[in-house]
Length: 370
Image (cartoon, rainbow, N blue to C red):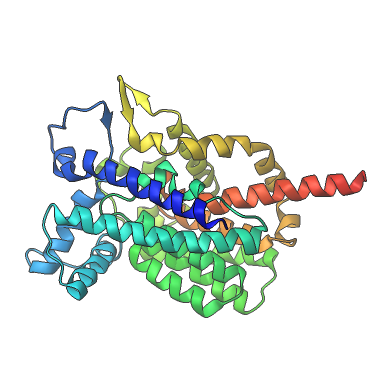
C-alpha cells in the first residue's frame, strides 16, 4: 500500500471527523432534547449514546440506580462496560464534555485497527487492494466516529472474525466473537461457524445447520421475551409487530420471516440512502448510507447471479466468504426490527465479494474467447 495515500486519508479523516465533532458532537445534549438546535440538518448523531450508553456508564461509575438484567445487561451495558474499564485503567475524568472526546478517540483508534484487518482481507482474500480513502472518508465511518456507539467496535471485531474464519484460525475467531457478543448479543451466534469449520462440515450442509440451529435454539433462548430489548414504539407497527407477536406467543416469528427480513434489511439500507433531504433539511443519518446504496444498486446484476448460483458458488473459491455473509445476515434477522445500521459491519465484505466475483467472471470470459 502507498504509505502516502494512507497518511493523507487518515489525516483527512481526523480533520473531517473533528470538524464534525465541533459542529454537532459537543452539543449532543441539545440534539437529544425536546427543542432541537437551529440547523439545516437533523439526526447528526447516534443518540443511543444519550438514551442508554452514557447513563449506564455513569451508573456503573458512581453506582446510582444501576441494575443488570440479561437482555439489557448484554445489549445496553456491554459497550458502557468497555468504557468503564477504559476510564478506570487510564484514570480518565468523565463528564458530559469529556465523554465526547473520549468516545471520539476510542472510535478512531478502533477504526485504525479495523482498517488493518480490512487491508489484509482485500489483499489476501479478495486478491486486490482497497484504497484507504474508501474507508476513512466514508460518510458512515465519520458519522459513527462520534459518541458512544456499537458500530466502530462491531466493525473491527466482525472484520477480525471474518479474517480468521477465512484463514481457519478458529481460536482467534472465537475470541473476536466472544468480545463481539458482549457488545451485541446476536453476534455470539457466529461461534457456530467455529464449530462447523472445525469439524469440516460441507458448506451446503452448513447452511442448513446454521439456519435450523440459529432460529430454533438461539432465538428462542434469547429473544422470545423481548420486553427487555425493545420498547413499544419500536414494535407496534406493521410487519415488525407481526414478528414480535409470533415470537412472544410461540417463538417462531423470526424463523418464519427470516428470508423476507433479510431482503427488508437490504431494501431499507438502499431506500434511506435516497431519502436524505426532507422538509428543506438534510437527514445526516440517511445521507451517510448514500455511497453504499449507489454501489449496491450498481452490483444488482451480480447479486442476482450470486443468488441464482448460490449452491455452486458456495463450493468454489471464496465460498467461505459467502458462508460468512449468509450467516451474518440471518443472525441480524433475529431482531424483529429492521434497521439499516445492522448491515454496516459487512458493507465492505459484501462489496469486496461482489467486486471479486465480477472480476473473476470477466477474467473467465476473456479466457474463453482468447
